[in-house]
Image (cartoon, rainbow, N blue to C red; front, side):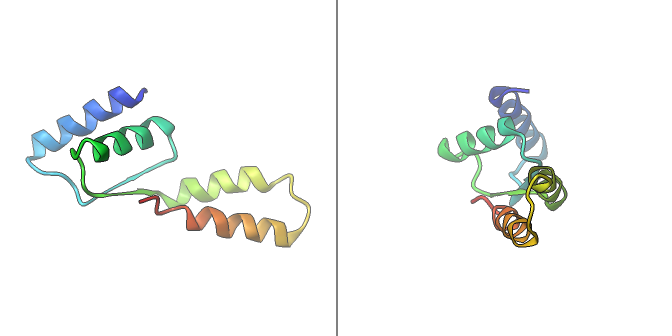
Length: 87
């Protein structure tokens, strides 16, 4: 999906429920992040955007398999968990 399609989905959801959620939890799909950022810029969403832990850890694990030391792996995991809250 594209940024525009995600934005349309979110805005339709907000309209149908009559209010905005205080937060949105998503995976790290670029289109979702871009749509939420655009809505925040346009003042159509004032809540928080979080990445869900499952996907953050899974993606970090895939990226660190090639690393050789335990310390490098731990630093990458710490960095990935710190980026969970992106607002």
